[in-house]
Length: 136
Image 1 (cartoon, rainbow, N blue to C red):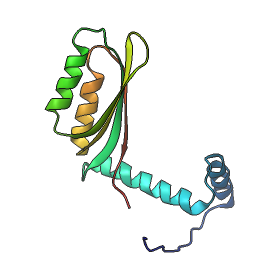
Image 2 (cartoon, one colour):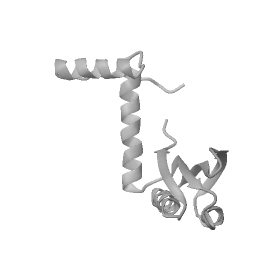
Image 3 (tube, helix red, strand yellow):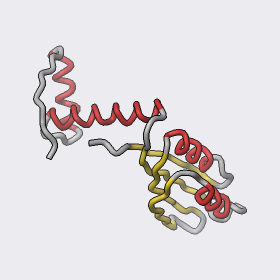
Image 4 (tube, rainbow, N blue to C red):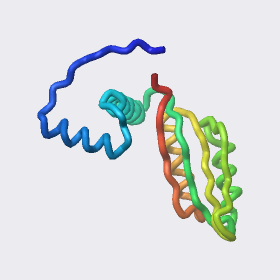
């Protein structure tokens, strides 16, 4: 288990009250977990913006598989990419639309380029990217 360090934080009472209301609505049982999550989110954002290290994440996309060559283009992007694709999940939403999720790892610049390339494929109706990193 990781060592735990206690520290004090001084805040205006109205900010603390609003923070407590917010974290209660989010389901946190204590401030420590909420603050630790905020710090981790900041660290992930910093890693993304600085381009340092590796990032892991999930790319989601919804596409019309009847659009000419969409499946082949998406597969080519996946095979030709420098990122690591750990896993894919493919769901048939309806007769035309598919939802695909890719669990990925790579440098921030490579992941951004890959995600942008997915979005630009004709037939992709929506694409999103959720990032995180291997934080302690």
